[in-house]
Length: 243
Image (cartoon, rainbow, N blue to C red; front, side):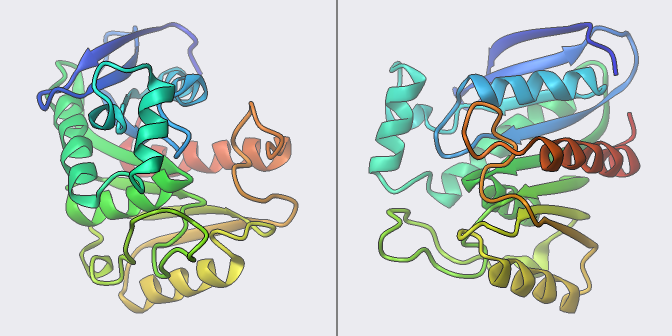
């Protein structure tokens, strides 16, 4: 781990702002697209981007809620996105694709790029890995991959069962046994479905954790689960992306 990094906000080719952190070392570097959680493009998401840079990756997190309130503060844009039922899948794929293209065009890129998402971003990471040419993907407690949201969850998203045969890279999934969305049953169903499709999947569930156990700024944070999860992510991306 090297704490020497550079971080800044850039604008993707599709006009979406994105937070970029890169190691300062002058070596070829793989990349990671970070998909933020439903609360939005916040400080905690940017801290995750910087942590990937300390692990040796060029990491970028696009503001996926920008289009819901252009020019507004990130919190206001996120509120607008939630009121609209979340980010539409086609728009999501376009904005994540622009972030992927940015990392592949970066002058020190090895060409290898992974994607990781948290909460709603976990589902979106799976979708992105089915639609875009990523080299590895990580789903951190993403719900509604196979099952539609219940009526009390105001998200306009559909199940991804039709997309799953197109998953084109290895997938790591990290979940909490105390989570309700996704529940352990939904996680087991997804693992079974992907295994039946012959996909390279590795899922792990933490008994003492619920939803958002990576979120250091929320009561749901679980130190042991988060630190073990980071170790698994580093090993997984190291195997499939290099460092």
